Every structure is written in C-alpha cells, then in structure tokens.
Length: 144
Image (cartoon, rainbow, N blue to C red; front, top):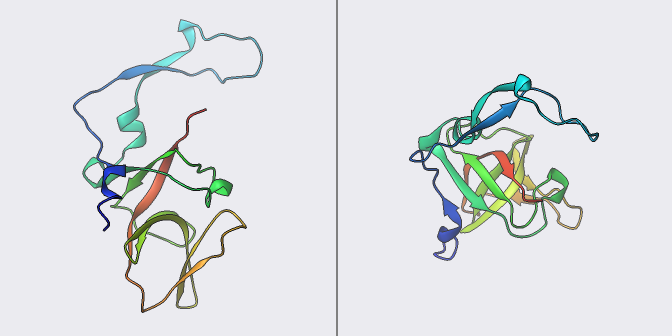
C-alpha cells in the first residue's frame, strides 16, 4: 500500500458519544417545525452508522467515478470489513497497490469493478493483478 494513501484512512472512535435528538415526525418542504411531542428519542450516530466497530474504517473520496451512486469527491465513506463483498455492492478494493471505490460485479467466473460514471470503463480483474477487497461501503457522509 502506498504511504500517501494511509493518511486518508481513519478508524472510528467509541470514546465520545453524542446522543442527539431524533424526531419521529417526517420532514416536509413546508413550514412545520418539530415539537417535543414528536421526539422519538436520542440517536447515537456511532450506533446508527457503525454496526461492527472493530471491522470498520473511514476513507475520504477523491475523483468523480462514482457520482452516479451518490459518492462525490470529499465524501467520507464508512466501510465494514466484516461484510461479505457480493455482486452489486460498492466496495473498497486494492488493485495493484491503488485504493479504489467501485461497484463489485461478478458474473460467469469474471470479476470486474464498475464505475458509476460513463466516462470510466469497468476494470476487469485478471490473474495478473494484485487484487483484494478491503471492505463493503455501508454509508456515505456527504456535506451539502
């Protein structure tokens, strides 16, 4: 793994718990405002977003090859290494030392990594490539 990739990988921390209000009322484009009557409880984002803390890491996205999947440059991906990489899942893979986010496709004994942007062709994985799936993307943190 190239040393310049490692600083962009982060591990979740359970040391700080922020339980924020979670309102049960739906959010509309109109005027309604949340009232205490609609308070469903507290939401801890660690519990909501991270199912397997010991197997989870964060990674920051560069590039635009996955914009069709709602993944943009600057987004932070939550990646779970304990989940099985299956056909159609968005994964973090290492191909010949390069860390990639792509949609995993497996069909007829062939594995390839597909982009969600027509400007980028799929990458067919061959026996000559050093290939490993690091984990399955479970969530995207996307700033507005």
